[in-house]
Length: 164
Image (cartoon, rainbow, N blue to C red; front, side):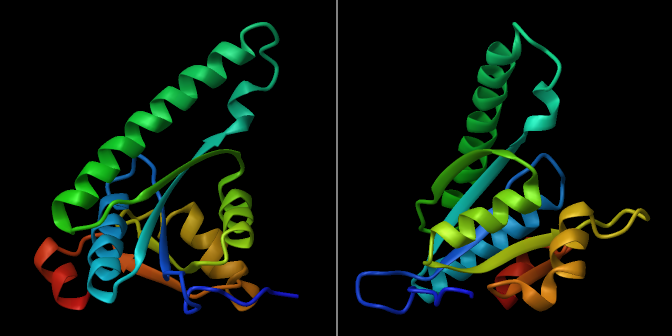
């Protein structure tokens, strides 16, 4: 059973969730969500998922690899948060987890009942919209616990501002 979102209850805010990565289209989701959160009195959550598959089979250096991956994730999230602050008056919540991206997104949504909208950006390459968009918006969309907003990966800042 899907738990009811708490974002409209007293003391809560509707949170927009963006999964941060190094893809160019990620910035489009970030800008849209930051502006939308600001304009609607909501909040922004930035999630970076460290792929734990990268550490398997490296006994002895696994801990060091995890630490380096966490530092890189925190640096990437810091840059994303600074960018969000530059386009909107908002101070994002930063979350780093390890695992499979689609599973970690779902786990965070289950834990934080204030998260009400997942914002993704579609890739613009000929390879399709991207693996996360395909995994979450394609197969799981019918049973996903919250709405998913997919931002075109090639929208300009002005166009994003107009629709946010």
